Image (spheres, rainbow, N blue to C red):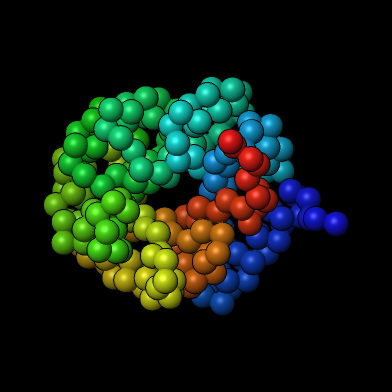
Length: 222
């Protein structure tokens, strides 16, 4: 029999705690964001009843109605996908945290909102993947700080396919050390998903973006 939602959540929680202990870290210092893309609002309600309060979405057209429908729960919504500048203001109306800030134009649109943001770094040579190139990290960080409204939390990254995840996450940790030299409070690391969160924790991840390991396979969305 397939494990229940509660059992999957518990299993991941145990794995996170084990990895944190291995890294000599406090599991309480790690925020698990459950990514509910393509899942109905009813699943979010079930997870909220199980004690989850941080949820991630990466498509505005799905996230907006879901956040409105669930407004009574007082959840924290994290926008974790590529964000078009023209939709950024609308995203800022329901999301408390945007993990995918990667260009000046996006900073400028979000500048009037009291949001927490992560700078997404591209670890590949493919510009279509999204993310700022590492050489431009500091300049983008300074742009965020200059807004006065946005709070820079740190760096977000996705481990590239075909590359050993821990090596990729170690590279992100190196970029983080550069970032905190100019923005000391921006020390958070949003990295690690269902297949690689253990390696991310070992390299210092503070925010995990976990979908299917907790939610189960996505329902058919056409």
